Amino acid sequence: MKCQDVEWKIVSGEPLTGQEGLHLLECEECQKFAHAHQMLQDGGEATPDASLDEAVASAWQRETVLERRLRIARRVLMPVAAALLMLLGVWALRGGAGTSKVVEPQVAQTESAMKTELVEDAWTLGWETAEQELDELEIGLALLEMDKALSGQQTSVESLSYDMLSLEFGLEEL
Amino acid sequence: MKQELAQLTDSELVDRCRRHDDAAFNVLYNRYRLQLFSYLHKLLPGNRSLVDDIFQQVWMKALSYWDRYNDQQRFLAWLCRIGHNLVMDHYRSEARGEKVELTDNLPSEYVGAGERIDREILEKALGNALADLSPEQREVVELRQKGVSFKEIAEIQNSNLNTVLGRMHYAVNKLKVLLRDYL
Image (cartoon, rainbow over all chains, first blue to last red; front, side):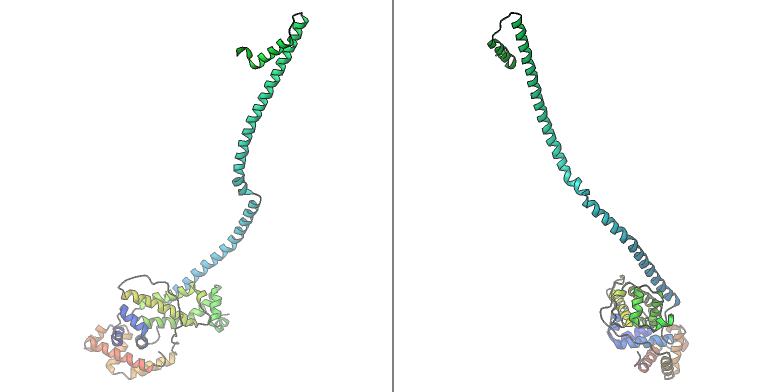
């Protein structure tokens, strides 16, 4: 790329191609030529239009308003976030989420243990009830034996014991 | 208040801009708008609409990246560097034959930007350059300043297009030599 090519392009007023533009960016002489051409053509330094100044001013306003909104949002949100964190901390310390997560299996475990205990209790109770019933039966038999003895019917101790055993273990069926 | 702000350095104004001071931005903008615009004109000859577009983009980037401005840098040099990078992106995409969005480029190194030429010096140099031209050459420059196309000038002067372009080229070179110390 020669400077002359770029200079002619500048004079003709056509936009530069990519290659010509890249040459201009690197060539100080061509930049001076472009500057001189611009001054000669415009009769002095080029100035931005009022509309361009307004566009930049409104961009500044937009940026400022956006930043102010962000700042206000930060001012409001930060204390709220801090308060929420504190509440979360307090809740965690009081075993909020921890209890529900850790204790749940314990509750289940306790329930199963309780079930086992209940079965055992029922069995024990059943056994005790049966014993009590047997005792009552024994007492009833003893009273019957006494009644028989008082009415003159002789019954030996062996036969009584045999009766008792027969009742308790069903020996007669064997 | 405005006078006080006008006394502040670029760094002080930038610092205020970071805190969203409208008045400080106005001072900074007015301090450098002409120089930046002229600089972009130099890099994008014959493309006024693109100059406008990139001029706006340079300020937008400056607004978004105040924090990247180094107090040791000259503010104008920083702005020009942003502009230079944006123009380079444009030419690179043109060279690749692509039409792509200008990418996010930020100044990476210091580059000197020409100071604004004093109005009196400029007018004097322009007057001298025009006085040194032949009547035909001067007429080309004056008609161009009025927005007359080269084709129309060729018809007015009863010359061919290349001759008219050659007269303009000569006039520009003359001014370039006269303003060598200021360009």
